[in-house]
Amino acid sequence: MNLSPLDIVLLGTVLLLAVGFYGLLITRNLIKLVLVLQILVKAAVMALALAGKSSGNLGLGQSLAATVIVADTVVAVVALALAVQVRKHAGTLDVTKLSSLRG
Amino acid sequence: MENIAYLLLGLAAAFCAYRAMISKHLLPSALYLACVSASVSISLYLLGAYEVAVIELSVGAGLVTVMLVYTLSVVGEDTYDPASVIPKPLALLVVGVIAVLAAWMAYPVVSRPVASGEVLLADVLWKQRALDVWVQVALIFSGVMGVLGLLSERTIKIKEEQILQMAETEKPIAIQMEEEMRV
Image (tube, rainbow over all chains, first blue to last red; front, side):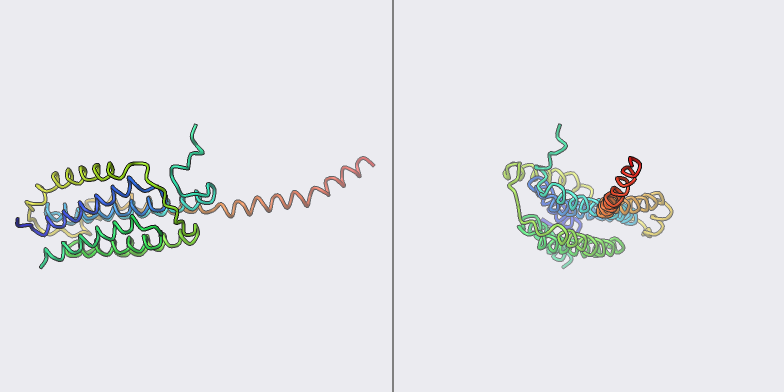
């Protein structure tokens, strides 16, 4: 089986995506959830650059990847600030125990 | 040679991501995440996406790692790692199905690359996707305001304490005035 470099990058991207999804399913720590989301977004960035390269429009892929990186960084920073507040008020980072708003 | 480099980088990124996920302590997890970011940025550079590679390295391995370490210094090292709600075999099955579907859908697109003229990122970013730039500016502004709002509880508490102190110091004066009025 003769794999091209783009096929191998696709394989790495899918591996990263799989690890990110698995972490999202099994993680309950709030800070680790942010970390796992970062892994997923790195896979998305790789996929966007790969799609741009294979479609012959790398500039567009890079532009979208930069937008995704900025949005993800803002989400991560706000989520970490939220985690600090949650730890202060609830005393835990376990997402399943944050049930004070349950009706 | 190029294939081996991509393969090694992909495996390194996946390994570091797995280690970041299963690590009991959060500080090694943050450092493994920085390694993932470095591997991804080298892969991006080899793909020809130079600008995004630099952004990914500086933001992913730099800013986000610093933010994570700062958060850990504020929150403290929380080693509590509760068991997952979803059974791990079920999670593995779901993830396997998703990975196979994603690879199956993306493979036909990637296996037939289309060659076209080189378009500069600056042209795309400032001419075709100018709205994206403004959205990014708005996102950064809203992110800064959000973080300021979330972390400004200390100043509110200090103001509340000052108001309480003022009320306590002014209370005897009010009582004195009432007593004088009665007299």
